[in-house]
Amino acid sequence: MTTTTASTTADAGAPGSTPDLPHVLHWIAGAEAAGSGDRAADVYDPATGKRTKTLALAAPADVEAAVAAAKAAFPAWRDTSLARRTTILFAFRELLNARKGELAEIITAEHGKVLSDALGEVSRGQEIVELACGVNHLLKGAFTENASTKVDVFSIRQPLGVVSIISPFNFPAMVPMWFFPLAIATGNTVVLKPSEKDPSAANFIAALWKEAGLPDGVFNVLHGDKVAVDGLLTHPDVASVSFVGSTPIARYVYETATAHGKRVQALGGAKNHMLVLPDADLDLAADAAVNGGFGSAGERCMAVSALVAVDSVADELIAKIGERVATLRTGDGRRGCDMGPLVTGPHRDKVTGYVEAGVAEGAELVIDGREVVPDGDADGFWLGPTLFDKVTPEQSIYTDEIFGPVLSVVRVAGYDEGLELINANRYGNGVAIFTNDGGAARKFRNEVQVGMIGINVPVPVPVGYFSFGGWKQSLFGDTHAHGTEGVHFFTRGKVVTERWLDPSHGGLNLGFPQND
Image (cartoon, rainbow, N blue to C red; front, side, top):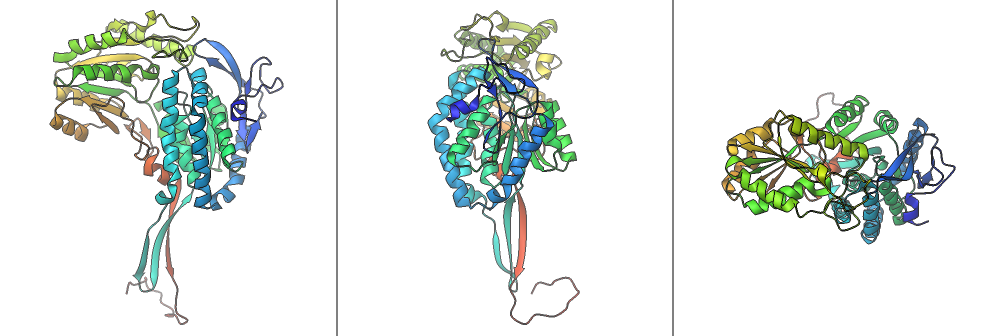
């Protein structure tokens, strides 16, 4: 069975399936599993608006089965040598590299992003796989010999056990790869709950792991909705939860899972600003605003959605953005277009509702994405690049995370007003400043209350060996994703104090130990 066919199995007898459509199954203990539930969801091709698959939705018994498989696999995987673990990781990395084109096609077919963007997503996730291949160095402890007479002290880090990952629709490969390579490399076993909107990438990855030699049960995929999520958040055998999604759900995940004694990293929503100062290269800034605002149809937690322009250059900057938007092709991501559809019809309608609200609230609609003529099926979930000017902080297109191709220009008098606006926002995920003034850039990076900062870089996603995460309501928990913080999240520290005595000992002493 190849990994391509493993991602979707046609099974007319599967619970809730439609006989003429492939049915996406769970992946438990190294094989596809139909599950015990009778509920299913539809999976769509966003570029055509057509149903392409059905998806098994987990019942509580399926949560139990996935966690039980991971729990059973944990002792042996925990005790597997680092040399053997990294051998499997390297094999997985090579398989992923060889077949990432197939994975990108799966992503485009279910998410809608253009193929080049899907391929970039896989390559970005591959950075964390490569980081995990060097986990031997990252797991090294410290050793102090003779801390006291004939007493040595050393530290070690050990895996947590069964860890869960709940990932969003916008990056069905990259976001899970922020977590599971380090979780597996450090000796944990994994239950991944991907988005029900684009589930097949997770099964493809699971089959790659099996081909790489990962023991059954170390990596499991549980498809579902709130039943699956709540089951993982409350299950006594799940040690940690890694989540990426909206702020309300991130808060719910954090509060629920921590109340059940779990370690949690819950990455929430964003309203990423891009501050353009008068001395900036406006052509560079216009390119960046278009790339950051409309890449992947704005369905990125790091998308630029609020363009903060100093008023003296705002008109010129908006004109340059308009020139660039006019050259973009919105359409089917498999046709070489620049921007694809939104992920579902209801989500497209929600984003369109924000466009209508922006007009009603008095913002100036410069480019109306509702008028786009797509290079794709008329039934696709289309909304073209949309640009508002003269947006105020009270309007919903500014306050809310829209998660679509809507860029709002907020005009400010200068640097101080722009910084104050950004710091007052409840989100603190990513931010960018465009300027040729090194002093202003240095001041900004020191004073802005945001976790990831770009200086003349619109989407400041760090490389894999640095951490990824925001501040304020963009993160619940104290640990960012990947980098050394990821290694620490998936391990617990132990400190060992040992003494090997001569045949005689010092006798009884009820006092506190003394250094000598």
